[in-house]
Every structure is written in C-alpha cells, then in structure tokens.
Image (cartoon, rainbow, N blue to C red; front, side, top):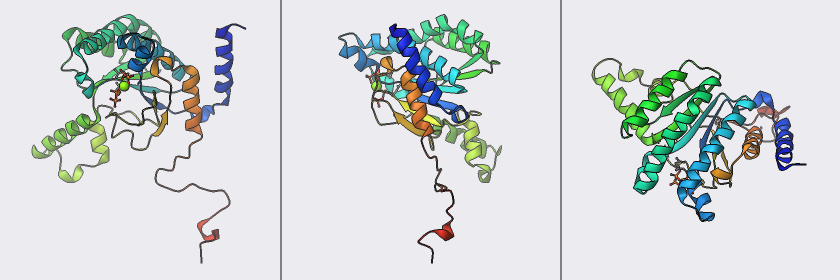
Length: 267
Ligand code: IPE
Ligand code: IPE
Ligand code: MG
C-alpha cells in the first residue's frame, strides 16, 4: 500500500469515530511552532512559516469536510512586532503572496475571509489586497475563515471599552445599558459564535493574548506537534478529544437516575 493510501485509511478510521452531531461549529487555532520546526531541521525560521501555510490549507479543507462552519487562526499577534525585522517583513510578504495566490480558490469554495486585528501599521499593498479579498468574498456563506493579524485580545477589549465610554459620554447609550451582549456586539468578532474548541500546537500551554473574551468557555486542546507537522489526523484527534469533554459551563454533570434528593448526602 502506498504511503498516501495508508494516511487516507488512518484518517478515514478516525473520521468514522467522530459524532457528526457534535462537531464544533467554531474552532480557533494558535498555529505555533513554525520557528522551532525549521531550526530543528537546520533551516531558517522563515521556512517554517512557509510550510505552515500549506498546513493551514489542509486544516481548512479538513474542517469543512467535517462540517465546521468557522475557523479562526492566529497568524500574527500584537507582540510579534518584537521579532527581528527580517522575520516580520517575511511574514508580511507571505500574507501578501498567499492571499494573491489563494483568493480565487477561497472564493470558488464559497468561503468568506475576514481579517481580525488592527491593520493600520501594515503596508498599503497588503491593506489593499485584504480589503479586496474581504469584499470579494463578503456574501459567501459556506464557511468563514477569520485570520487574526496584528491581533491582541487585551487591545480588543480596551478598544471596546473606549467605544462604549464614548457612546455613554455622548448620550448615545446609558451606562445601565452596558452589558455582556452590548460588549459582544462591539468586538471584532461581533456576530460570530464563540469558539467551542481552541487548539494550540507545539505544546505551549498558554493563550498568548488570543481571543481573551471569546475563549471564556472554550475547550482547550494542546497538541505537542509543531504546526508545520500538524495534519488532518492530528486535527481529527483534537475533535475526538473535544467530543469526550463534559462541558458544564459552571453547572454540574447531570447523572442519569440520580437526583439531588437521592444522593447519600441528603438528610
Ligand atoms: C507561530 O510560530 C507563527 C507566528 C507567531 C507568526 P512561531 O514563529 O512562534 O514558532 P516558534 O514558536 O518560535 O517555534
Ligand atoms: C502566538 O504565538 C501568536 C501566533 C501564533 C501568531 P507566539 O509564539 O507569538 O506566542 P508566545 O511568544 O510563545 O507566547
Ligand atoms: Mg511561537
């Protein structure tokens, strides 16, 4: 059997184990480990970023196949500007190239693409291609791909706080009207359901300023695999793990045939 066939068989076996009724609608991913992947191979870190794009394309396909509706990926954080200029410039150029090459297929597959973050510091060429990609795909409704660039969760929350404060001081809204729903409606992810699942690759166990508000009750799955080695098989493993979780949202697990009164602790 060819290697491709073996991989397909392995993926199909996992795919069959997935409960199609319990597929997360929205998956968020911190695509981490590109640099370490390249360094391990004796290559410049930029090779890892390049390879990472191919992985994103595969995971986008896999999540569509599974029936997910939204994928939100962390591509560049507000803190990533502290990296060497050469690496930052490479990433900006890579976003440009990838969008240019992929937008046709993204549109043909009826995927809507959205960029989440403060685009102000990016070069005009990138801003232009982002804006034209967003407007080209704005009416697509098969799938939503959110790409977080120059994104920071704290910055997003401060921005919303400022907007609401401004509306209060101008009299547009009353202070008593400020609640979670209103706050939500001002976020960059407004109108999008919170992610049920957050995947972080490369074994790091932190959020790194990603979607701080939106991840309040998301299930977290840490994969030890570096992003350039991540694949459909690893993605399906994350989904299966997610499906085994008991999402309590602060409540208690409901046990069949047991009521509070029946428990041994009741007097
Ligand atoms: C994630 O991989 C991609 C970006 C942050 C742009 P890294 O570049 O953080 O790779 P590591 O974590 O250094 O291996
Ligand atoms: C988070 O990864 C940002 C992206 C994946 C774009 P980092 O590599 O920047 O996070 P830290 O520095 O390990 O927390
Ligand atoms: Mg990293």
